[in-house]
Length: 47
Image (cartoon, rainbow, N blue to C red; front, side, top):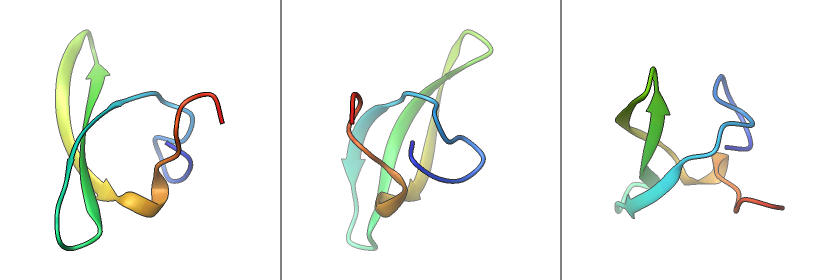
């Protein structure tokens, strides 16, 4: 993610919705966790 409290953490993009938000999967405490965030806060890995 590019912005916010999880900046720099890699996640797997799952889906987007009509409200400019995205569902991502994070690995937290060795367990996957789904999270909705603003799509503008995301950036492609390696960029």
